[in-house]
Length: 160
Image 1: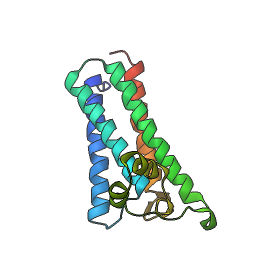
Image 2 (image 1 turned 90 degrees about the vertical axis):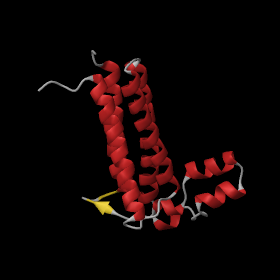
Image 3 (image 1 turned 180 degrees about the vertical axis):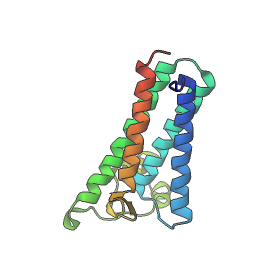
């Protein structure tokens, strides 16, 4: 069985990211799990990575550039997944205080200040709301980001 073409790989990246967002929305709206600041940040990186995959599929040019951007986007999301895993591993006395909802941040603070607070995370990000096979949501998200980054890197180094 031949490997998927570069175009098929980009479509796979898009649909993989779409599936991740649908799972996140299911967990939020059906299971009642509220996303923290870092969860929201990770969703943005999933959407960015998926958008890059879709654009690469549509343009079908500059595949190495799109691959590099896809890998960078996925690695950026992986950074925030790792940060949340680190917060979840802290002893209770070292967990930062919980902050207000994201909507409040954007209402009260400037965009740059609110964004900086979102990217730092808070005590809500340290809460483990769900696990599967011993991994929390950011653990699974990190695995997905690493897979997406690997596909992006593969797009850069493969022979078309």
